[in-house]
Image (cartoon, rainbow, N blue to C red; front, top):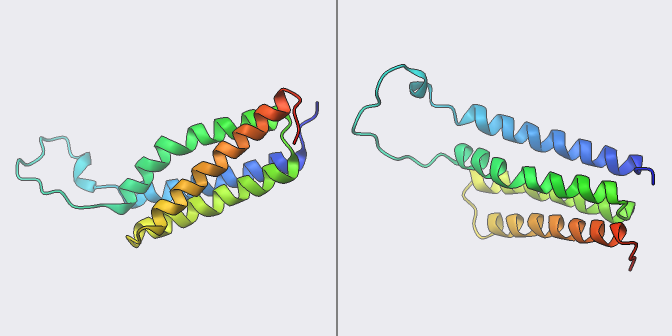
Length: 135
């Protein structure tokens, strides 16, 4: 079975967009004082850093999402559904970052839930395709 090129292109586009958002988050969350070769001061105060939280969350959730996307792509998931869901995932993930930066709740959590739902549905589509069951 051949891999649908539109699905591969959608996945590659999504990956580069999410990578770019994560790259910006990592750069924005750098604390120059952490690069000194000396012990940190004992009176450190915690300050909320949205960029660091975005970078951490991206590194926790996105890799496994792309494992599911690639597996579904290799299994031959329906191209139209696959593309719609990967695009929705990308838009929701980008919106999640914007809402996180602006501390807007509960929409940030809703974006997180819906982008995870997209991953789950793509996984189900991959399973259905892999086992030859189509709706």
